[in-house]
Structure formats: C-alpha cells, structure tokens
Length: 174
Image 1 (spheres, rainbow, N blue to C red):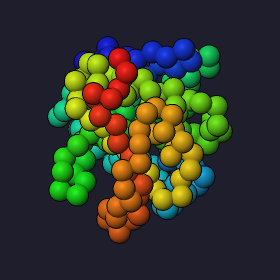
Image 2: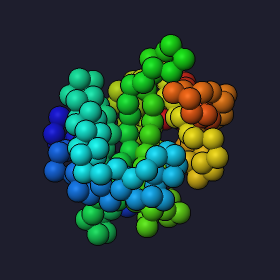
Image 3: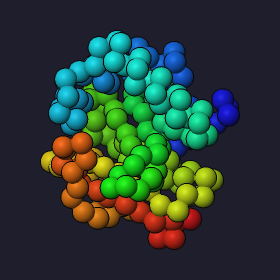
C-alpha cells in the first residue's frame, strides 16, 4: 500500500503521510484557499486532526487523499483523492482536491483530478464519483467539468450550499 503512486506528466500523487503536516499547512493555513470553504485558516492542531482523519480513512478503505508532488521542484503543492461521504443519505466516493494558491491556474488540479478519476474507475472499479463544490467556486467547477463531471443539483449539506457534480464509470472513456 505504501508504494501506491499515480504519475502524470508533471505530477506524482502518492499516499498521504503524517510527515506531510507542515506542507499541508501551507495549503490549509492560506486564507485564499480557505475562502473556498468559508472557513478561517487551520492552525497546526486543526491540520493534524484533518490529516489523521484522512489517514484513518485511507487505512479503513484502502484509498484516500494523495499528496500531490510537483515533479520539477519535488515539493508538495496540493492534495487530491477520494473520500467516502454520506450525501443525502447515500454513501458515495467524493473526488476532492486542494492546492496551494501560488500554484493555481496552471492546470495542476485538473491533471491530478483526471488521474484520480482514472484510478477510481480503472483500478478501484468504483461505479461513480461525485464532487461537492461550494456555490460560487468557479475554478473548482471548471476542474470538475474538464474531467467529465456534470452538474447534478444544488444541495445543502451542514447548512452550506454546494453544487453537486458527478460522473458514472460507464460514461468514462477508458
């Protein structure tokens, strides 16, 4: 399991590990990133809790979020992966991603999300994926659309408005 890696032309996606804490804090401690969540930046304790929860998911389900490493610089610039969530009473795999704001608008989120989509369908054989995107987050909406997801509906989850995007395995080009 530790050796699982996905490769794209510019990125390496590897399983997240506890030692990623400081690099992840550069993402979740950034007010620009957290504005997409309507939350204030994480402190170190909140980041550790978030990371441990994701590592538990990875251990329990055999997949989770990947740390996204920029090959050219060898640095962690984001995370992208899968997490089981209950949405409207249904358990399904969400494809999510978060990137350092200084690496936005360069296609990295789309490149990583497409690799994770292919992994979900081709390797894990999941029947479908969805993404919940805060209403108004146009950049994340574009990433979902570029990887073949389509708008399903607007929903409220935990008193927050989201656009729900989804893609089915049978509509995914292999």
